[in-house]
Amino acid sequence: MKFIQGKDRNQTEFFCLDQAVSEDNEVRLIDLFVGAIKLSDYGFDMSFIENGRPAYHPADLLKLFIYGYLNRVRSSRQLEKECKRNIELMWLMKGLAPDHNTIANFRKDNPRAIRKVFHATVSLAKNFELIGGKLLAGDGTKLRAQNSKKNNFNEKKIERHIAYIDDKLNEYSAILASEDNDLTAEKKQEINAKIDKHKQYKNKYEAYKKQLDETGQVQISTSDPDSRQMIVRNNITEVAYNVQSTVDAKHNIPIDFKVTNKNDSKAMGAMARRAKTILGKSDFTILFDKGYHTGTEFDYAHKQGVEVLVAFPDVASHAPDISFDVEHFNYNKERDEYTCPAGELLTTNGRWYNKASGKTINRVKHYKTKACLTCSLFEKCTRNKTGRFIERSEHMDLIDANKKRLQRNMETYRKRQAIVEHPFGVIKRQWDFYYVMTKKTMKHATADVGLIFTCYNLRRIFNLLDQNTLKNFLRELGFLFLILSSHFKTICEDFKERIYSETFCETSYTALLKQVYLSKKQIV
Image 1 (cartoon, rainbow, N blue to C red):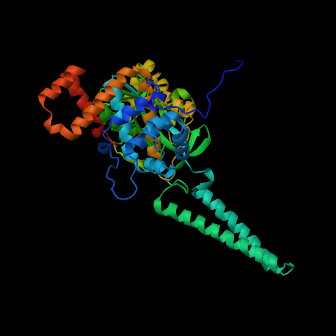
Image 2: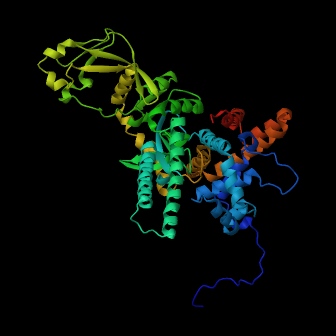
């Protein structure tokens, strides 16, 4: 026989779906992971009426999404197709093939519950000591929203559109008013139709402008109202969401994420607080880049008792001679005064002044000296005709302390990018998830991002742990959920002793119960 021959398509065979999926196939791990979660405690809706068409169980839809995201499939229509032709999904879904609307609505309606599933992966990683909890790194990445730049407006863009429309209306009106034209009735009707069309556009843009004035927002997106135009790199912008994430250094596992439509400058304090809640302690260090360097955020992190290392940003403006930059002025905290490189003292009147930075009001003190006007180094020091002027923020002590920590721990800080960019690199480069799949509102975007980070953590756990060890643990965990949900108050000592003798000692049992319920206490 010259070639390998296939089977006869008309041959009748006995087929077992379970035998078609190997024992080491990861769909079995997905099945066990979802089976170990008590979905009602996570916020999934389990109350369905008996009348009418039965609903799909949330566990089945969650399994479908986890499988899809792990295999780079996020589209509800594509997942519907895969249920009918993918042998692994046929096994996982037990032959079920939900409609794409059912699939999409499950993701859209359960953002809070999906976040808790993500925290379940964090608890699972903690149980196997995959999270060190000593060194973390935080950063944000932009994921493009389902909103084009064309459908994003700010005040200047709206004014340009209105000005263009006014010019066109004046042009059309001038044509109609001209006595020299030989316009036919048909041509006049065409021009009037264009005038009506432009007036409709003008009304739309004026409504956008009114909305900006009433809400105080700086921009508006019409397709996905919570998305914002942001700088993604250099001067390139996209209408996007900014996803903040905190990643543990031991195995590059994210322990937290948050979808925002703001830049990084006001995110550090909240990320530190959330990390403290998740880890249950504050004796860790978080690394951030210079985009997070904000005085109020240093104050917030300090109040949480969390140590941060934040890169020092470039000086916004230099003195004519850089040796006279403010960093070369020595501050005496006890006397509350600065000494300039020329040896002169810059003093303050002690008053605090409010300085607006966006919507935030910071308190600052002013320092100056009359000696500047007669100083021979005046031209090297400042371009201000009245002399050198220094503003000191009320948070400057914390900023200086961070700078000293950074100088002492530069080797540690150099790990930041390798830690926090690892998940982003996998998600955006390898998986091609550089955009948000869902439409309309940040809540829906959070569901999509939650599934992304859930599946990233599961991929890390599947890669790091022995599969049999993980399977045994998830089976026991699912068994404990069953016991705790139905017979918690009636578990006898003999039954607990049987569990101990099989796989657990009392200490590990107590620790496991703590991990089981840890996800309930996680922040949302």
